Length: 490
Image 1 (tube, rainbow, N blue to C red):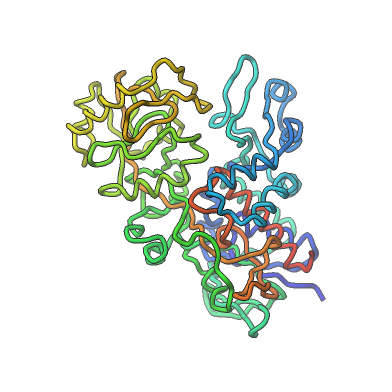
Image 2 (cartoon, rainbow, N blue to C red):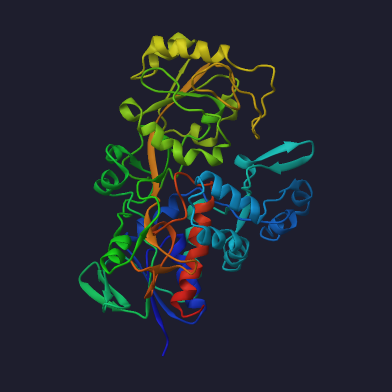
């Protein structure tokens, strides 16, 4: 008899699980809580960058068959091996990442990229945001070189198309509310559809329905006071359903429950993500300028590391400032280098030809203190060190209570621009305890038969922070593992 697998969720991790289970010969049903117009979970709001280990440029080029010979000849992707990927994971999570999960993520990353490509996902080099020219050669920095064609929406659509080709139904507007569990194993789910409640029997269930970031009560309970004030970058449907269902049948929790991925997000952005804008409410060029709070003071080292390794934790720091906001300030020297998201129509921006005029426009900020802060910052810059935007350049400050370690450029050339940002939460780090085969573990740390989890519903991989692009990679790696495991493959 053909095995039946139910996948809860329809984002990147869920679609990978569904495809892998179907590839193994199972009947698969995907349950998507959102209506079809809002399908795809958080993945549809993502930029689409995917971090993976690779030995050389040839390995990257094998994933991008659309590259012309001329493009390939002038592009050097460098090397980002498994040791470097693992080291970045360990460093940014303060050595708290689960070693077994991290090893699975890193060691399976390239093979999973090839598997995605084989199922219709197209990749292209991140020419605009991650590359720089050195003579006639284009090089990449930070270990992040490819993105899905069409970003997060393109990745989701490729996964949906692969499901459609294999006859996998996606039931929209159908919310899984409870696991069918006999005290030992999971045998399906109870779901609320558009018209009725029903039991859906299955040999295995994969939970890939995201974290709890869209529920303000849970944010305040687990992340702490004030987190109900954060904006949600992605789906309004990620309220922790899958995590709750598994905990109710005895699953163990894992990971950084008081931690999350949170970024600088336009202060005027709506409560939840807007699919028309996608991830363009983010404001990630802060290393090129300074950030000040309501007191007019800098509060963080904007140049502590490459943006790829700091942006996911700076949202929390911004939320903790008076009023929960900050202003990012740039002068004419660096405004041409700002990322594309600074040029959208829906942006909280002010401009001025003088610093006093700019200070008066920074809503909620002590203007006099701001002008003093800029003067002190400008005077502290090591101007003898050249500015290099694509690498840590050591152009820092001296004598400041809060240094800027790299990319310290004076705020002195008009016109000036400033952007108001708040906190945008992407996903939560706490979730279900899984092993390196994506099996959900019980409180005695034994696998629960018939239950798997992947993506943001699983905890233990990310703590405090994460390297950019590793979230989508983790969803694909563990989604694929979950689908294979649910199909009975080991």
